[in-house]
Length: 262
Image (cartoon, rainbow, N blue to C red):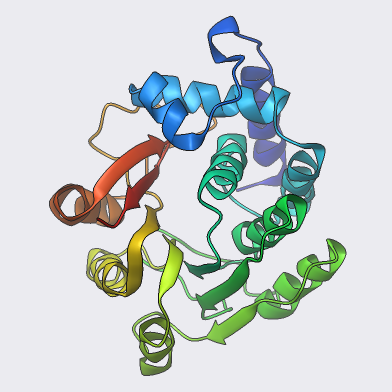
């Protein structure tokens, strides 16, 4: 993505989510918002409104930090989603598969610090330019060092980082060695890997734990605005064929689908 296009999309997103709408002017829990706005597009609109008007300043500043110099992907609505999820469920042990430059895991640490609950943060990633069928990454970024630098920038305790592909034995052992309260599957988008990540994550979640599948809303009723997208085929197929029938679907924010283990 070019710098000019990135700035244009950021401006469109800011203008779109800055529109105040009375129906959205409510401070709800995540599950409360999903019940009130069961339509995917309405829930997305609520989360964007929440980010612009109700999110705490530290959460908005964190998003601004990651928007500068293209440090992170995602959309404003996702920061509101994570704030509401962690505020409601207060997960004590969290894992992201596919860290990139640490936007999500540092946000978890920041939210835990802001809300004064212990949040143990883990990440599994190759921390390299390794891509997949739909993604390519900059080879000049020291991904692991960059992630740790962002944690220091927000005065957060360093996370546990496993340098590996998710299918590597080291990664599988780490995931299987602990019971998780929250896992975010955001790694390789190819179907076989997304399916493997889902199954390993599902099996090692605590009862009542949360599993969030990224890039997984293709083929649903979600109609993304110009600055957003619905996801990729691999993760979307995993959600359609596996997650929807095996876990409790709590709600979807754009291409993120949130599930709870029964």
